[in-house]
Amino acid sequence: MAEHSNGFEARAARFDGRRTRALEADPDSVAVPDGGLTWVHVVTPDRAEGAAFLQQFGFHPLAIEDALSENERPTVRRYGEATFFSAAAVIQDPDDERFHEVGFFALPHLIVTVVKAPCSCVAHLFDRWMAEPKRLGKNPAFLVHSILDAIVDDYFPAADRLEDHIDELEERVYVGQAEALAEALGLKRRLLRIRRRTSAIRDVLNGMLRGDWPEISVEARPYYQDVYDHALRITENADLNRDILSTILDTHLSLISNNLNNIMKKMAAIATILMSVSFFAGVWGMNFEHMPELKWPIGYFFALGLMVVVALAEYLGFRRSGWL
Image (cartoon, rainbow, N blue to C red; front, side, top):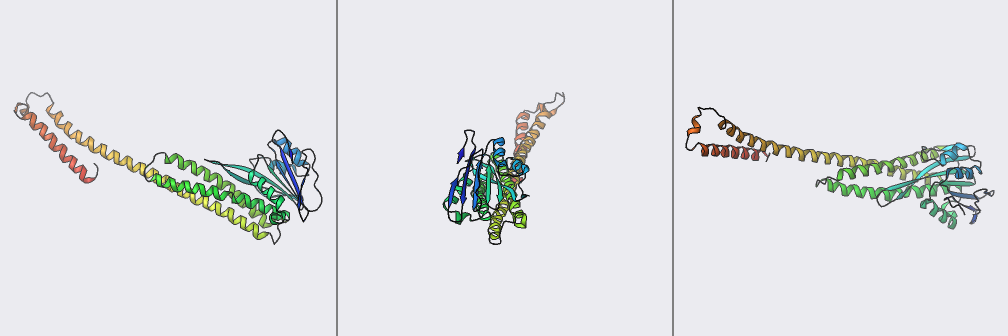
């Protein structure tokens, strides 16, 4: 294993049909033995250093550029004997998910994987392959399958965790918690990010099954189909949960609108009662000289009683109609 202080790391191992052994992976020169199966795993935060290392294998410059870029649409491309494709590995944080693009260069006797930051999924599988090469990858097709299968399987707990959050959020929305709206939008964004990555992996696997990578043997094809089905299932589950979130958001907005309507109805009812009382006060508050009611001994108490009767009648009417 070769390491640099700037984060560059290269690990290499070769399987000769019986066992695996580690190889020297010097950043300035790397020797790939003929025959067997060699896996070189590269962690290269520095783009220039990563490009210089990958050029030693004779890979196409466009493939190297795609492997070191975060903005390329994952697809399967054939460059001579080498096939390039990529897939995004998910890493779960306490409140979010991070993604690492893993680039693959596949040749008949060589697999090179490239990441821009340490990826525990691929590193752990490298160690397992060193211990159990026949079980995880006796040829390039089966080794690539093992890596892709591990990457896709890591999406299941991430998707399940989001689904649990959505179920909890659904219960909170129906009790009227206002902060549910912002949380629902955040979950929807996270689901969209997962769907974007898994749909890209699904497209890559579909291309490989169509024959874009002819090294997939008849024996290995069912295993790739199984990983494709897993990626498809995660994508469909993300779509379903996004629809559920959309329904939750619509329900939340409907509850807010309904509460606002109830408040406006109560305010309108109270305003109507006050307006009726104000009407009588306004009539008898006019400064006309000839107003017979002003000379009544009981005029003041009559006016107050009339106001109370009218207000009480309106209150009972609004209460019966459900406005109060």
